[in-house]
Length: 114
Image (cartoon, rainbow, N blue to C red; front, side):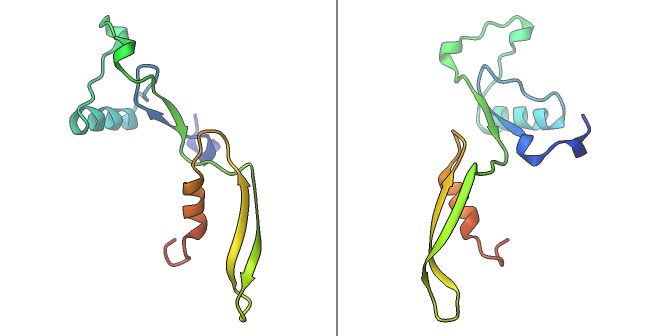
């Protein structure tokens, strides 16, 4: 697949577990190295005839790298004299499994921090 045809919102990252297929390229090797050497998680390969006890491991899954809100709106609650918004109220909706705290963190970053 041509990487220029893929949106950042289509990229998923694997969460370790027996039900996850890791990439077969350099990123997959990096995952395996980190999990095995740094975290002490050892992989049991189903395709090499080794029996894997699914009860003793996590199921795993996938999480999107970037999630966009389904809906977002805001309105000023309190303004300063210079016209700057001092306090605002946000209303938003995120897909299941997304973290509202991450959205709020991104919204509150200053231009200097970006």
